[in-house]
Length: 430
Image 1 (tube, helix red, strand yellow):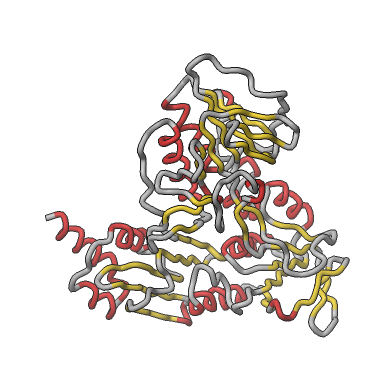
Image 2 (image 1 turned 30 degrees about the vertical axis):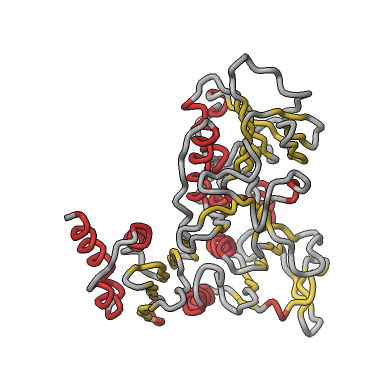
């Protein structure tokens, strides 16, 4: 665990030494810092994060909860002294203000850091619980490594646990709770089915049925009035259902509030161009906080997934050093393991206006494939219970290979995607 490090101010650097400040200590910042150091052994790199932990992956938290890994297994870099060896100064603090004119950032400790180039990679935070009483003892988010420790301290086989939320993060938590043998109750989203922001109703209902077969109880948000001491859920008939622990996983929002008054343009996240540049000179953004180019729509979206964060970090670092790297755009991509049932969604998984779809459904065996087409391109896909062509689906969508005659073949049998990919790739290569 890292010790809090307070400083009065930046020490002056040697003449000609570039000063890079990275706000955030997640995958985007780590990749950016390593890219900067590899290219410039002399530059000054300061990475400012709020948690007293070695930088880690939030997506690894459920595996920690499951007991598959120790807490150190979540760390992005496993070698002791990795950041010290690279002379990356990891400061534990919260940045409260950015002054673009003075090229400084100020922390909650009252310390300030001046920069030549600044990267904002502050990630996201859990959405507020939709019910009154979320500050009740026994109610916890599953967002930080410390949250994970609290959850493990509070549960044992047979513990009664309520999970408020049924999105991506919640679904991975379900797997961890099932492995721990808890008595689990899950609140579905307002749509009435699981993972509604990444899959259609057919897929969401299949995952729900799978979980129910594992002994998970499902309830609707409309059946809950509030959270009461205990902790307990007050139901619509005013009855109380007590739990040993209530976990809140109702979504996330980008951490952009501290930018008010900075002049940096934001929407759902920080608006950036293909080079991850903001509207302010010398300031870049990456990861879950960046609203960058979207491969599927041609617009700008926040894609809160680790592969996007890592790509962002590398490209932003190259451009901070004066390069001209360009980001083609994030492909919406989700691979989810919910207590043994693997599901995926890619690109325009819900289809596109004027497009066509091909569907194959086997409810009894929890298998589902949906392919979405625009003209003769594959632009989106959903799978449940099929892992044999996950990589091929991504490849077909990202490569934008015209399907030709294979489109009609896939409409008849969506499982032929591997054949289509190999055939069309060879044709294009000739």
